Length: 515
Ligand code: AMP
Image (cartoon, rainbow, N blue to C red; front, side):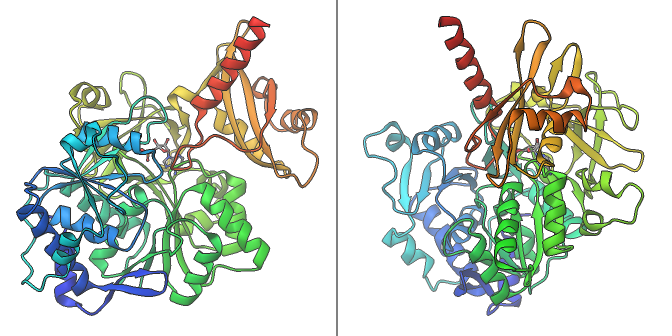
């Protein structure tokens, strides 16, 4: 089944229902949305010679036409390659080259200089291209989406690449259906009254979640800012009601800070889905205090998009269960349609409570890495995806992530999980952000080093944080040194780049050696 069938079906049943808004302004009804996508699909096929299975890249900021062109690509059976618009054009060009995309769609049509390598193999198509806009407005009868099988690739997503080159993850039409069904079972109950807001890049998880919203006939709202602006979100929520959005933990922190400063209590927000990185207990507790039970947590990975575990809203907000705090600090339990295990290095399941690698199997699991059979074979073993995340599962199936396996610090032969040290430091009222890494130490193997962003509201120095840690955790886990910084290096999805922090320390050590 071609997932664009959902769009056609809603357009047939509710052609006049609002489908896409830019802020409060209506950009398209479902009838217009489907007609534009179908018209552009015909143009891609008949005028630009794109064939089923060809790749079409999208390199643009969130905008109302994003979903229309995305469905045009899927409609004709081609593969969409969504590229984060925050990447440098050179990085985008690398992805386009790796995917061997035939066309890249951009807002202006002039992002890539003519005469470059890219220009020889791939055409850049601006959203305002006259032939494309004419095709979008064509009054020809809607041709239904091309037939595709459930194993046909729909979405070729490049991993954020916190280490090394990004890899293309082949996500099939069947994977997207599995992800959407799990959304409706576990994450939220999508309805035609939902207003789904895209405050995070549509090329990533936020964009993936538009599929279940289409199926439910809900409206897609692109903020006029094109990105994340807490004041704008608060205004849209109050004007539109039933606002649903996906946000990375750093965005939630900013939304809560805005609410605290303005007295906004979350009116009009139906659900905030958070995930994509660790949400520290102190932050979610503050979120609950300000907005109440509007939060759902998901844990996913490009390789099993948005669909590994879920912590449903009742459990995020629960205070009654004896394990309520531990559950809130977990990422929840396996989503519908996938199985999750914690295993040892030989892929043998570990008993409850023991830390090992998280593996997942099920219908949402990628088909493999694009053009990289070796990486696929290393990552998917007997149908189980090795996530590279470490965690433990309790007797009730709740998974608590400790860290990425490569981030674990081994000091004096003992494993130290940076996340635990980060949680402890973040609980200090004058600490705003923190990242903990291990650095080589001749004596201990590795030493614990903390990078701290202070709130600026009160004293925050090394002796104070040291005393704080000492009163809360085993002394061997305490950071050896603290670096106070203005901000933490993050990739374009807001994930802290521990590799950059490690490089920084390596450079400092080298400088000391030379001095
Ligand atoms: P990506 O493939 O870029 O979406 O990154 C996926 C990675 O983000 C996972 O492997 C985890 O390390 C991390 N991640 C995703 N969701 C969560 C979550 N809810 N809590 C903690 N880490 C998460």
